[in-house]
Length: 447
Ligand code: CTP
Image (tube, rainbow, N blue to C red; front, side):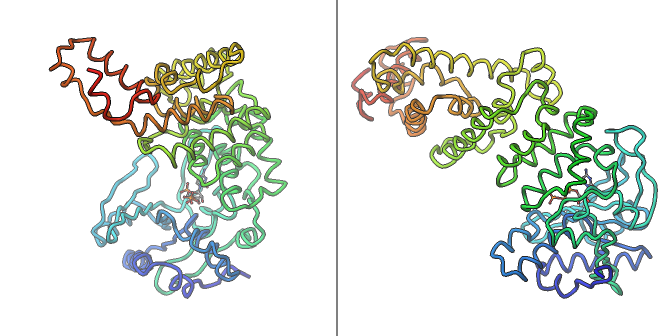
């Protein structure tokens, strides 16, 4: 009953005029080139979610509104010919992806660059599980049928005489209404095991549920070691997308419980302890974000989450994980550096006898040990530190973050300090400032 619904009036209501206009133009070019043109996938899904949530007076409507304006276009013709034509008409930048036989247009609307991916309607044959598919020309229906989940398998036609017509061949809209993640055919996960991670991501993002048959097939693929057949880079990409969602923790938990984590990272077992540490990790990240101005956004969350996940992994396995996911060469040594610091702290706690923590874990204590750690290591360190010590560590980080020295190496040089002495003296002054032994400004009197 949905198959021929026309969404034109909703598109006019929900889409920014510039995007609506862009879609109309693409449809016009279709007629000029005698080609059927469709917008497909996530764009259609999010439009329908926005319509539904508006109808239900849900205050989250905005969140479905095309966060990044990526537009997936399918044409029932040669994509590159159509793409070149459209790029010329729109005066957009044109990039060809030879290997995939697709192209992208980069089209500027005021300050935003909109990416439009154009592909030929196709069916795919997978010669080997986990490999990239062999491609053949086809119709829009077959193109949609090869996709990951029903909710991502709708299209809207853009040619002017049928602009806005929704194509829903697989009851996708029903699944959207009922909040179900459902594969379109039994081999979906076998053909493309990265869909295992995509299922988790969409489930968490939309608060949907992987329906039972699909979940069975997912588990079969995981237990059948199909994730292991995919390149680390493709898995890492999907894993990072999960980490960039608003609530990655729940998704990781789900992956842990479905045993996906162990199949992604050999010898990592998702235990309650690990889960607690991950919970703590995300609290630590919040602290860094909210309290430390020198905390830079370039912290790679994948690196940090992996520190937690692989910290107990034997080194031989760890080497393979590092290789598989393209982590830097010093990843393991950085991990070990934090691990041994953590052990030192644990030993000190055990031997503290009556001594007060505030006297042991002064800012200078951490400064001596942690000033060479990068932000990713510091976050992992904070995650590992026992709760009753954490406030001392945070205190150190905040103080260091706010620390400004009124003297520099040059001042020391003038006073006759030489070479190494300068560095040593500066460090000494920093530590005194961090421990409140001197007040800001008083460092001048120390040289
Ligand atoms: N797709 C698929 N199998 C995959 C990846 C993608 O079938 N392994 C299809 C889906 O139809 C998807 C479309 O390609 O909708 C575009 O993929 P992508 O841009 O990765 O996802 P979106 O659905 O657009 O989701 P997002 O909102 O995260 O961009």
